[in-house]
Length: 185
Picture 1 (cartoon, helix red, strand yellow):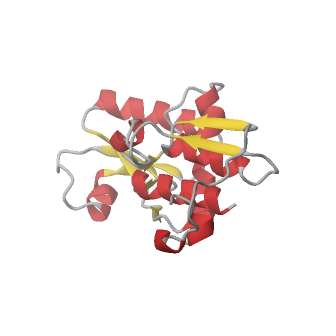
Picture 2 (cartoon, one colour):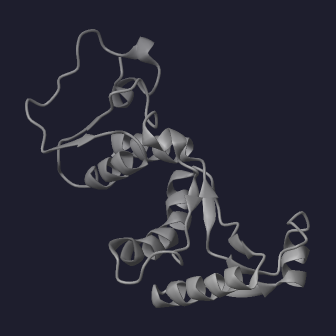
């Protein structure tokens, strides 16, 4: 039946006949990937008639399907840019979102590795960018610290920028949790 609120997932229990849909929608969100599903979830908290449209047969079948699932810390974004303004704030929202929706968020940190003096200077630039963007939990690690944390890293590594606040999600699970919560609201 496609009406989870009526049948609770058991479509055999759904009433016969078509669902009554509003003749007009207040908002139509096109695309049911991570972004579209997040927008639909947020809008569903208000007294609005929201439709989430997806061309494919399921959520996440567009760009989200190829998403790496990295929750970036925000050290790479040019200070003053729109991405710099929102990346760190977004990063900080994931733990609470996961507590609410249980999609599987892992705050596992990330490292940018350097193998040459030139790459080490790039790490310093990234560290300063991150600080300018308000990112916390950044530090430059020496070779010994890196190998202690990640023993399988190439032993020729010289330094790394460590971002303790970076994480990962399964994009498919994330988008499904957002879309289902939008429906529940």
